[in-house]
Length: 281
Ligand code: PAF
Image (cartoon, rainbow, N blue to C red; front, side, top):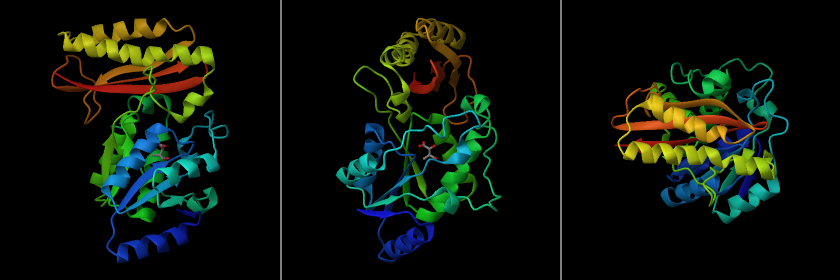
């Protein structure tokens, strides 16, 4: 497994892979890998000749009061996971190489960036779209793999590649959960034992919504209220949003018909967690 930190070296490596006509599967990450990332790498491994994983804690997608500094980092652990998953190249660019002091180009994907997490994290998706566009230009992958847990991020990246005629196919992969239902996330490490228990209310509320919808409830207002009640049983919870939206354009729906995305963001103590579920009736 090659470890490359320099952007130009990475581009040279990619050009030589392309010259041999090999396909590239790409998994962009911010590191501190877990089984969710592993499943993305596994899928990339099955569908491509060469697998590239990037690890870059992108400063541009963090707000001024967010956790950029304390975001968990552990290169050696990540390398081990990448190696065991059959990754060929780990790309770890450094901040000053990705963003020169003169950097002045950003990618804004309007409309779908504005609701859900966009409301409480202004500028976040601009940072995500910008870094993903840059990484796509460097890695020139045939396919890139993203987790469905970040449903809004996935929808934004799909829209960006469509709007900007990018060649990389964006593939969404299922959410990977702990045995008790908690969606895997690098940020779960912030939760203490007691908060970890309270965090289960997120997936429980989604499961409840799923069963209510399957049993015929169509009114979003009722579903949201019941989900809210479940989450409020967690003493340290603070709901950022619970929304039921169209999975393509992320616009709110009021009556459930066809396919809907139920998405939520909740603070448990100081940790902001997100989760979602797609349901079709
Ligand atoms: O989902 C993430 O880990 C990040 O937002 C991404 C896509 C790697 C961009 O920094």
